[in-house]
Image (cartoon, rainbow, N blue to C red; front, side, top):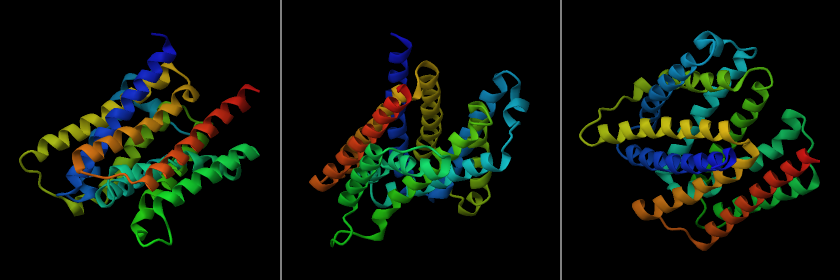
Length: 288
């Protein structure tokens, strides 16, 4: 396999593992507070991040060194907040409906890249953003009897993840990716630990196994993600991130008896299609 093929394979593996992690999070959230579940997951993730940083050149001292400490900490808080909202959405709406809307985060990144990062967004990508948000409206169906404010929860998660993505791109202009990854895990773990103990829950029986699998899947998914970006450029593997929508939806239907109606499928297709188009236009712009 070429490095690019390996990168794609690792990215597909990462989307599969993260989909399993989402399913386990939903399962545990049925019987334990969401903040507690995310806190335990983050403790394990933080240990992985620290161990990984210690093995790199310069060790922990190099990883901690940052020119933008406030931004790096804010990034970590943004991501853990997004995960809390996302798991809440899994619990209340299900995997398939959540990921159908969450897939629009890339379009939010495109829309905000101009005012936040000073990037030039052409009319074609703006049109794609409009089509994608039309897809979001089709999925959540405001103004119809089936619509509730709960349907906006995955959109909030997408917005928070888009802000995290933009903050990461801005932080990486000054700090390396290793430093950003370190603060993602450690700052997030500290933030959720400030509130998590107030929601402490006792694990019993099989929940110990599920919590262990949740932690291992999180580390494995991030490891696959790192290996993917080590072997291929982000522009090559990014389109394959949309497979998480497919895998998570299949798990939701097979294990949680979720249903995907025609409107949700059509809206999700518009969102993914628009997202793929913006990725392609970005590659064309950089090549030109």
